[in-house]
Length: 507
Image (cartoon, rainbow, N blue to C red; front, side, top):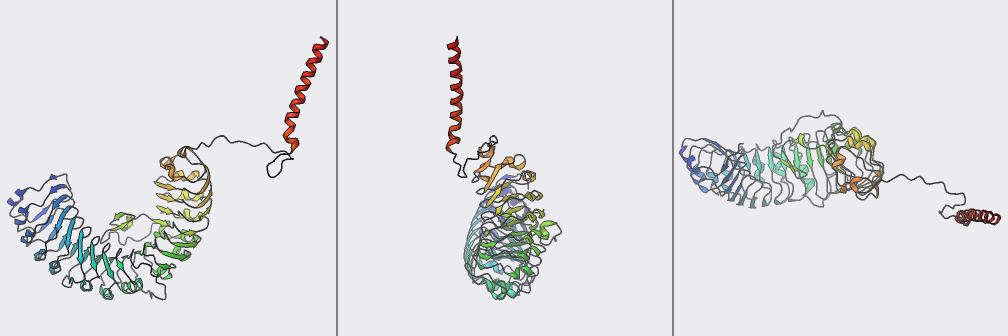
């Protein structure tokens, strides 16, 4: 964590008694010096978060005393040495976020002291179904996500009784969640998203037996299946679940009531499915929920007033469970390591909701993100939104909202993203506060709005004079109304001319 630059010095080889070498979070570059592999007393190499490049030489197995090898977040390429399993004392191997390719070295499964194995975000490939993980009885965290591994989830992973975190997301795995995963009693974090898995009912009926499971990511799997209802999913566990993500699965059906039993649930993502019917009122009674994402479904009806009573969005009395996650996860293309850093939000956009925005939504004072775009919402924008003093993003675009944009919204000092585009709003766009930072695209599609930001002058207010009694409802005027002004003017001119003529005649 300094500003060291350039390659690692070959003179390290003179430090023959060196046991720990840490130079992480600098700007070191170039390859790993070959002489590094001669320091046979090394127990730890931590050179993560640099710009190192080149391959890991197979001579690394000379470091037989190595316990920790951290080379993650560099630009290393080539294959992981196939004989790396000879490092029998190895406990932590972190090679994630490089450009490593090739297959998973089978010899790694013989490193019986391994507790942490992180290989995510590389270019690794090949079948993993035949790998035998049964000897890794001390393994606690394994992450091989964001590669192109194929095959089924290995049954032998079920024999790793100490495992607490397992991430296989963003690969090309197929088949079903193996029933043997019911034996993983210590499992708290499971991510299988973005694979070609099937049988969502079987998966949830298996995983509900992992009683300590707190994080469950199953997004973009089980395509075009039906959302498990209470008849198919006999839910009596998942008592510790805090994150449930089934987004992007194109699941059909309605939001099932078994979700209401997840009393510790903080994050629920059901976005990008084919769910229909109303948003159930019982969501508002979920005691811990503060992130609800129902974007891109076919939900209908109203926004239930009960949803404006979510306790965890009204007062910050939620527990500190999962303050630090076993493995990081992506949300809105950002990586999070701590759950409490996740923006608290309601995302209901891209549905068929048709109602007024409940004024009670102003009670959710801890809300940071409110997305209601592309529905059929009508009526005025509630003044009460100015109570959402923590709001950072507000999107109400693509609806049928009318009236003015409340001036009070300028009080939302944390608001960095805002849109009311494509509605039927009118009047002057508020000035001051964060409204000085929003561009024209935030207001486009509202022909009755005016203001400097959209280059449309509000002009002068014109008071129309009352129309005469003869005017019809259609706006046309009678013949006498049309000619009375010219006749009056002609009479006046004629009278003046006659008076002048008489004057000159008498003169």
